[in-house]
Image 1 (cartoon, rainbow, N blue to C red):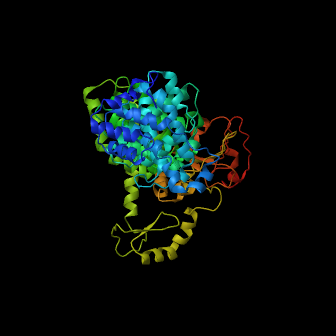
Image 2: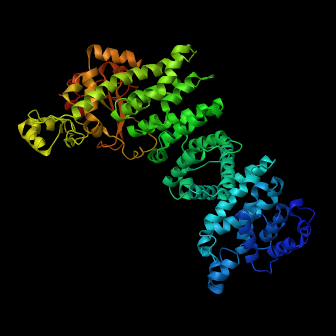
Image 3: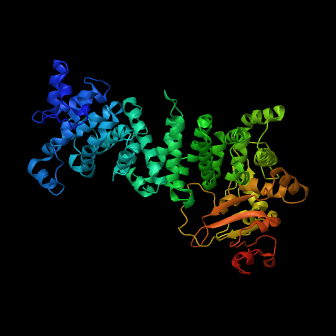
Length: 622
């Protein structure tokens, strides 16, 4: 192929003629179509492993010659070629373009962006062919590549670096919009998150984060749509995609880089989450997978380590995504994990910095207060109190000006103090044998719990049997969960309202909950039940309720909101437990059915809801 003056100077074959003799001979052999492709393969392997036998100006003409010198086999005749040539010969026929792509990826960071409009079309036509027909080429002759499909996908992501740094915006948009490119990116991303080889990881990350930024720009301009199902399929499942996101947050973005790219890369991941599950779509199934992979804690940890590097819009975006994760994470362990990773310290920093993040707008207070109905969350807050106290003390001593809603955090801490006292009482009861005639009454770390009601504890199987015969048999039945959709709350709930709210007009089916999501039965009758009932008893009326309401501020009377996935209805029902005097806060269009020691005459009908008196839930209230 004679040199052409229309090509970019970096592609001129005369660059090779300027090399020393031995390098010139090696470069010619790699470019000569009559030579064995193993010469090109050896050159590519040397560069990929960190050696630099040739300069980039000599590499690019070799890459160009091997990409344009051959055409991909026709899809209609590839089966015939396989039968006629055999698999080994078929694989050999594509070795040159494969290794040319690998060679280009090894020098991608040094490749002039101006040369990529010439190289990219030839790169992608081969990548598209190899990925589509990779089962035919899955056998690697010399064993350097375990997976040709993955290897070319990795290479193309690294090649994106010079493409997406081109001065021509039209070319960058054209590259990002390439059909099939998203699949290659997400496939390779999910397969390389655990790689520790810097030669692979660094250029790959440069390419993948540039790609995320570019697709975000086109999505914002409504010129591209990133479909979560397509991305998940390319990553070999939604769980693999979620693992890649969480692993990147935990392990990639917390490491300092020479030019410290943590902030822009964190923004890229936040934007990616928003693109895969837009806020307008609400609680999508993909969020459930993210939460199962502990995304809430990872988001908090990453935000805490980078908050000083983030500009105000990115800070707001980070807190918005964190709030969504906590809002959708109905398993209290998710909220507890986020708190232990520094959620409260992070919130206090955000509210006291200048300019402050408007946490009221994000609704963090309601999420945290609902969490205090769970002993796991109360215990988690207690474990991090030592980290939070210096922040509170500093503000009290110095009188530092703070946002007006900083008081909300203080109110939350005060409310937690009430709940933690209740938890301590519950723990004390749980450490004592419930059989009144127990001969020892010695606290034991190995106490047995009644598996049916979770309310009583025993030091031995013998005490459990005796207490069962002496009266717990009858008491347990009133505390144990029923097989009905929802059962009457215990007597201690008489001052509370148990509502079943059926949202109407849902456009999409309710997604399945994350693993471990507490349904109503588990909330009221599981391990959390003794604590929750103690809270109800302690705060149920009189001065106790007033003190707690003052401590928690507006809206603190609401104890808990969960989604009940066990209801025998066609879609999910939201179980709400709140004080009777909060009934006016129920949104219009929602039906609240009262239960407990009240009659159906007290059934609250929200405006426009069409609540039916005497329904099954109200009849059961008696």
